Length: 166
Image 1 (cartoon, rainbow, N blue to C red):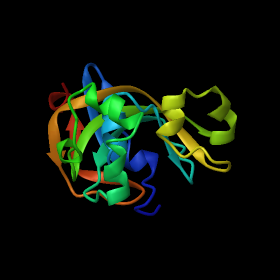
Image 2: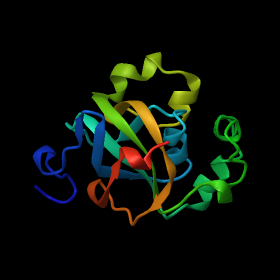
Image 3: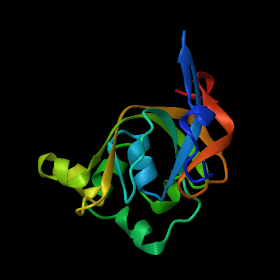
């Protein structure tokens, strides 16, 4: 399978007897990476589905385009971020893994868009034909772990373990 979509067998997380090893990651542009880290954003929307179920890491991409930086000062982004002390674009980490979460379901956006809160619908692209990766159980890291990201789903050179989590 291509690097864009590592196979489950190749990079599945291990979770047993109080142990957690997460090897798969997805890069998100800010402010969406931090919104997921904080549990303010529960769905990641993409143009493609992912059949994986289980843990993956949230990586804050290094790039932070001006239009995305401006969202930090717009409602509801500003309200969600400021509750946790993130007041300026410079406060958001870049080029680092910030959290892990579990992918519990992948559904077409048109199946869920009508039932979303204003906040959740504002934090994703729910246009027809896209997919919502529904997540649960987000766990923040003790500190962001600098790492070079990639497009698509990628395997981290260094796994995230329980020791890395808050």
